[in-house]
Structure formats: structure tokens, C-alpha cells
Image 1: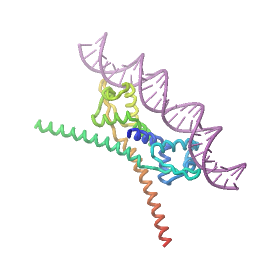
Image 2: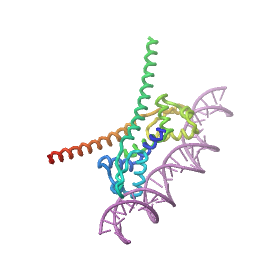
Image 3: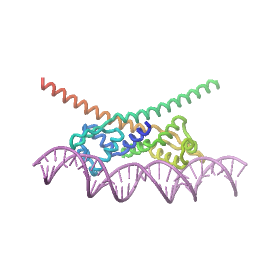
Image 4: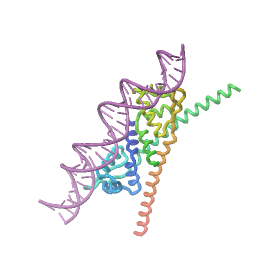
Length: 111
Length: 111
DNA sequence: AAAATATTCATCCATATGGTTGACTATCGG
DNA sequence: CCGATAGTCAACCATATGGATGAATATTTT
């Protein structure tokens, strides 16, 4: 289901550390796991786990060269969240428009 | 901290049931807790808890009339998530532009 | 071949989350 | 005042999450 993708993405993005990781990757380009971990007051392993979560959400990709894993940001999936929001807004506006019409036609009847 | 707000919003939005609640509210306008709960295969209490999470994230507001609580969608906070995404994208593009410049000036030197 | 480096895997822990049920509170209708 | 209705609060349970540490794996360096 696509809805699960959206949940995964939003959950992955819902953690401060993971958002910081994404920011680092976006501003510095692909980074190794150790390089990323250096920015956090947290064990390498914990950072590694966060990366895994981001990876499973499709928000980062991994290119392995020998023993080094290069992690890169992947912003594409965030468009799913934008789409969801846009859809909500459009439904909202449709309803408001319908409401508007109701009021207008009521006014006309009352004239 | 504002970052906590963003986490709260994304976490609230990261659950399917809660997103469905938002959709219902957006398309039908304010609804009572019981009316909302009727749409889910889940106890009233669970829905009530989801509403609370949404409320704490600012994604819904509550108007209490007597014993009835009317819940309404509040899309404003979702703009924070849009801003975050937009910021990521802009940093990304800045870096790409800088990279582009580097390549161009390298080409010029090599001519 | 041995030591060092880069990373994941496995386990453990405390706390958070999503769900349940039962009790409590508040309001409405007779 | 009493029963029904609308909700929340409290406690409980199973599973998920975010963190830690120690061991295992793979690769590079010496």
C-alpha cells in the first residue's frame, strides 16, 4: 500500500536526529557513516540505525565502496508528503466552495 | 524549540488513522468525537487518544458545546513541514550551483 | 599475516506508542 | 432526580523506538 510508504516517510522525518542527518547530506553531499556520526553526541551505532530508518523510507541511498558506505540524501520521497498535504488542501477548498455556493443560492432565494 | 513542534507535527501525521481523521474533518467539516470514531474499526477511546495527539500537534482544534466536542482540522501547522522541505531543497540547489561553478571555472582553466 | 579501520548485527534497556477495557465526569432529556 | 449519552482518564498490555555496548564481518594498511 502507498499509504504505508507515506507513514514510513513521515515517521522517518519525525525525528530530529534524522532530519539533521538529511540536512548535513543535503549541504555537504554524500558522506560516510563515520563522518555523519562525528556531528552527533551519540554512538556510531545509533547513527547507523538512524541511517537505516532513513534508507528504508527511501530518504537516503547508500553506495558502498570497499568498507566505506557513502550515504546520500534523496528528497524525492518527500514529494509524497507534499502531495498528501496538497490533496488535503484541495479537498478543504472544494468544501469551502460548495459552502459558499449554498450561501449564495440561499441569499438569492431570500431576495 | 521550534524543531520540537516540527517533530510533533510529523509524528502526528505519521499515523494512518490520524491522517484519515484529518481527511474526514477536511471533507466534512467539524465532527464530534463519536461521529469520527464511527468511521474506524477501533474503540471510541482509541480515536479519542488519536485526536489528542493531533490536538497537541496543533493539527485539530476542539470546540466544546455542552457534552459534545467538535473537532476541526487545522492545516496551518503543516506549512511548517512544507517550509522544512523547501529549506532542504534550497540548500541542495545552492550546493549544486556551487558545484556547477567549480566545474565551469575548472573548464576555463583547462582551455 | 597481523593490526587497524569501517560498518553492521545482536542483545539489552528504558520509554513511547497504539490498542484495549473499566471507571469517572459532565450534560441532556424525561 | 434518574437514566441515557458524550467524552475523558487511568491502568494495562504488546510491540516499537531510540539509545547503549560488545561481537562479528569486511576491507585496507603495514
